[in-house]
Image (cartoon, rainbow, N blue to C red; front, side):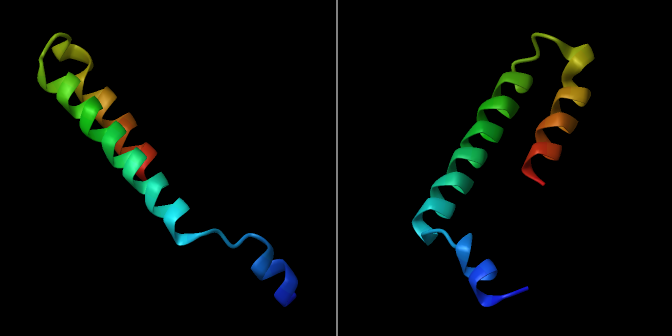
Length: 55
């Protein structure tokens, strides 16, 4: 792989931080909704989905 290829996808570190913050906020909102207990039968599958999106 050439140096040009490696550096072509570089992003501003601030962009990366914003993306991570957005994902964390989304996860917290989802966990809060599950914690309300409106649909207890779907809590575990929904939490598994949310965790998989963080990875």
